[in-house]
Length: 538
Image (cartoon, rainbow, N blue to C red; front, side, top):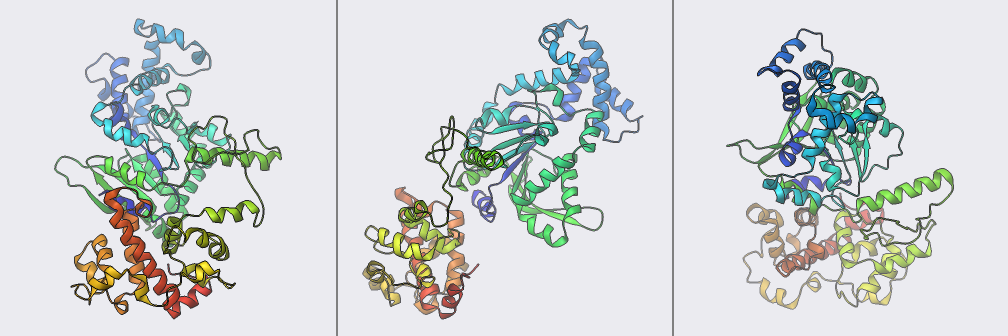
């Protein structure tokens, strides 16, 4: 299950954002869902066994425009507030909340905030291993969090993220789009921000133009993982409806793999990944990936393997400083030098170099690793300058890496090839293989196989092991490329692995990349033409 989720995550260039609903608060904090919360406060407001049911029946007599539960909340709030000012059990809270009361904050919201804060302090130990994994997502595995929850669980575990509460903070703040938490329905730290009754929802709907645009931008730029929500949740349905309204059928097709809906497997249900389609008026529909899990650990493990190079809070601080520099023309005192891997974010100092072919950038090519070259040959994601790779990187790496994938860069290079690089060029396929492989391959049962035939009956990793025994003419470079990408998607750290048990896979995948590099960029004439126009295979 983890590898299947990871495969979907790696199809996107951006880090995913989590869209967190009440299901996570119920699971990790023991909090109630919306109805459960109203039921609790209904029992306080009205001393009756069927207090909540009474409020529901009263609400149904009204013309409620924002839904039944906001109207129920409004009716409960009215009675609860009258009780709160007199009831002895709330005396301490009345004294502590004097300032909020003077600002017109409802006692109902003050008590909801107090209840939620208290429950946020203790985590459910039954899910301790899940929570431990969730905490690790903060630095390099997600871009941010959007939530309708009031509790403080997210900000308590993601302590380096910047929190924005409600629409006004979002409207009057400069958002950087990374390492941020958007609490769109308020937070227990600010009782007045809580969106719960009919007036709150009406105001939210009337003034949400900016928020709607911001959410739409997030959805179009990032994979979104919904967790803790029902597929029928009204908030989610409203957002999806806005997306469907704005996008063409073609663009809806493009974003379907970015929407991942995680649901809990009920008793007797199997874990699975499937496509869920939701239809809207006008004949449009939106497809999503539905992931049904008993435990969230496979999801968190997949996210942890799909890491960005630099930590998200550091990048947010850098973006903020650059934004302020451009806006005010005054650099902040923090902008000097720091290792971007440094997790100490207090008083961060960063240096930014601007210029075409600056000396800093040229020197940087000498520090490129072999693993980065191997990955770039397959995913074409390094945006490297072929001239600098050939003249700076490869000569530096060859003394400690006697064989490297070099032909992609030679295909894009027109200058005089350095002697060190020239001596590494292999004219024949056999020169890519060790003497031991060449000695053993004739008697191999895989000798006459192709990559397609191998993949019909072997795992991707076993196919890589068998590749060394295939005849040159039986290896289609595009089929090989697909195989290598599949293995690297499932094992993203394979190229840089240090664990003893992964060394064989590391050797197999590097050999496969060198074979692909030679076949496609050196031997294959059509590919050479493609390389000459900077159009490697997709």
